[in-house]
Image 1 (cartoon, rainbow, N blue to C red):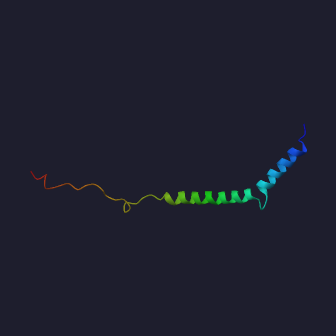
Image 2 (spheres, rainbow, N blue to C red):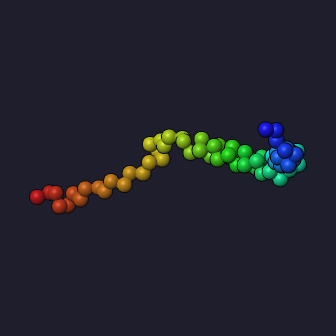
Image 3 (cartoon, helix red, strand yellow):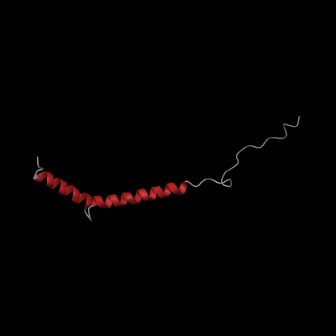
Length: 69
């Protein structure tokens, strides 16, 4: 069974919207690609391991006045 002219027209319209040079969807896809690239770059920047200088010592010090019994 061959596709009808309405089906071919529908496929052509969808193809023009998706792959058209100045179509809205192609610009949206470009913006989405830029966003994904920025997201990946942000993830790579956060993966730096923390050095010992960046860590904070929060261990409480012993109270020496009570331990001298």
